[in-house]
Image (cartoon, rainbow, N blue to C red; front, side):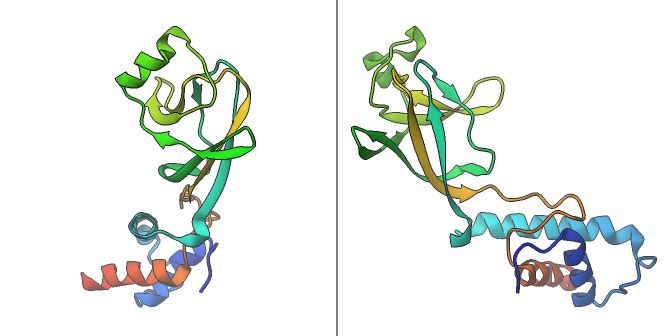
Length: 179
């Protein structure tokens, strides 16, 4: 049992579990299908469970007058459990969700700024999904997120799985052998 196995190792393990030949020349046509089954099963297992070893803390530096920010690339912004903002040396929980009533208090569209930051949300700004800070900060600070690491994609043979190899392989083998 190990995390971090390369995709090429996972393919070899899946071939053994399903009784296929280990010779590279045999079954060349099915390699891409096996990779896709492995990829999909890792994604399903990732989505279906909370894996404690994938929990991460990431930070975003907030700038005076900046409304939108990129998320850290290795943070799954759909699986953020908690956001905190340090204000007067106290970490304050931030609420997710900005609505029209909030803009009646501090209108970000008119560049109204204030501290502390009170809420955050995810917005498609035209250049992708970004974090919106509300109200727009009037001082530099740091926003801390606690959530789940983004799943490494299994595309190249050298890509490494985030989840346990046996879990992925036995799930994949069960699917193949059930056919």
